[in-house]
Length: 138
Image (cartoon, rainbow, N blue to C red; front, side):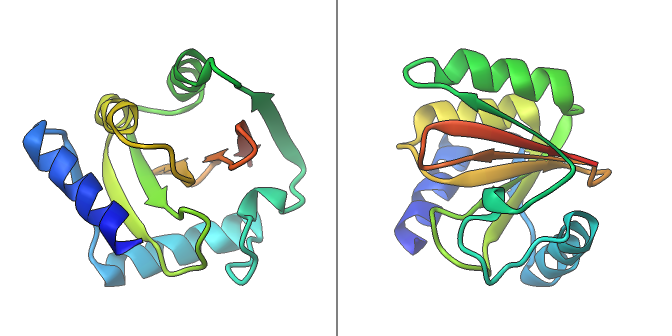
């Protein structure tokens, strides 16, 4: 995954995106809050398979960009956290920034697994390897 992270960092710098990587300490604290809020098990590879009270799913096929943008704009505030998982177990890298920059970054990258959550830790949006977007809500 280190090659993917390097590629993401390069894209952020080259395009002047408003995203910054959190320190490992800040990442650990923030993800612990998220884990508790949604009862996530970080030993589970596919977090979107967690059973939560309120979840929704959208299959996107070839229409990822419009569905993703719509969901991000509908459910998330201007600033979000992007967690790069790429089907690997915790620990992960977390970038914080505005959702416009997240959209721009993802448009420019090869597809990889990630999730996005809001600063109030009330919503998580997963992009799965099944070409689904899965939304968890508190």
